[in-house]
Image (tube, rainbow, N blue to C red; front, side, top):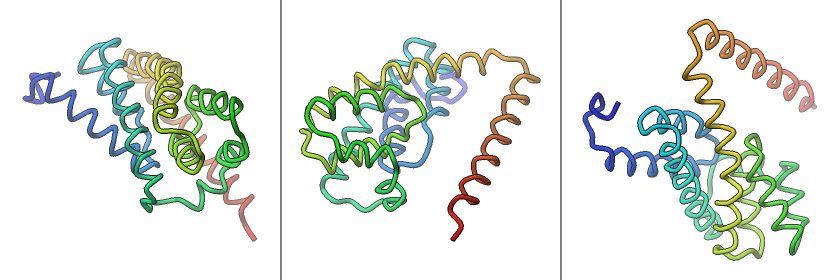
Length: 181
């Protein structure tokens, strides 16, 4: 794939990490597509390593910017998120455990965890270590799913995409129904 794009591997690695940092700063874009690209371009284990590095650096940069008071999209939604509220109320070892746990789960929005950390008293070093270690299991799960999708035949991918679309419409319907005044 590197030859097709016309860039050497190191350039692609730096671009991938930069995009991952941007995704983390924006806080609402999923990084699964970048993980899929990394696995396709660099192979399974190298792709995972690049994704872990990119997501870790993205979380650290986001943490720093959020702590410095940078405004970003969706702050009201994040501040009322149940995961954010749980993290906000925690302290000490419970905070460390929850940060690690929420980073491990692939479906908890990273921006929620990062914002909660930025609003807490945790140090950037402790956040960096716990967040990075916690992302490893999450990215492994994500990578195995991505590999199965990349290796799947066209019919399976269409079925999966259709199922995801139906699920998203259902969740949007439920959210809209529950949030009506």
